[in-house]
Length: 143
Image (cartoon, rainbow, N blue to C red):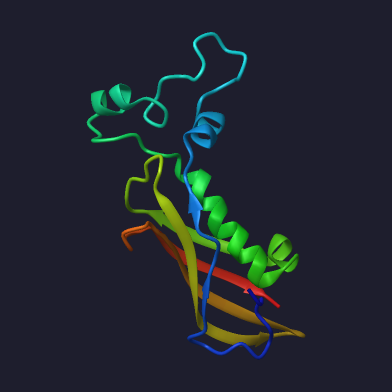
């Protein structure tokens, strides 16, 4: 995938890498300390019974885990400048479970000069294998 350039047009669409949520990564991310007795910790992320006891139908992968997929896409689009100038605002709108496949997406909604750089605003989201959005938001960065 090619990143943003000052000439990238409003309406340009970008798609990140498709990722499958693995149980191993969920346990590593949300299971607590690896050396803790009874690892992984039982919580809404790692244990179906615990999640159901909290009123959920299934486990809920930690949203910050797949927020990283959007950050990866922003780094692909903006390069290192994302680390200094990038911002995002997100809303997590659906449950993600182990085995779901997510893909991050972005559409340029505005482009304007800012000093010697170009400021881009993007609509961003991740969708699952059924095409349902699970997180939506906006991002701003400079090139």
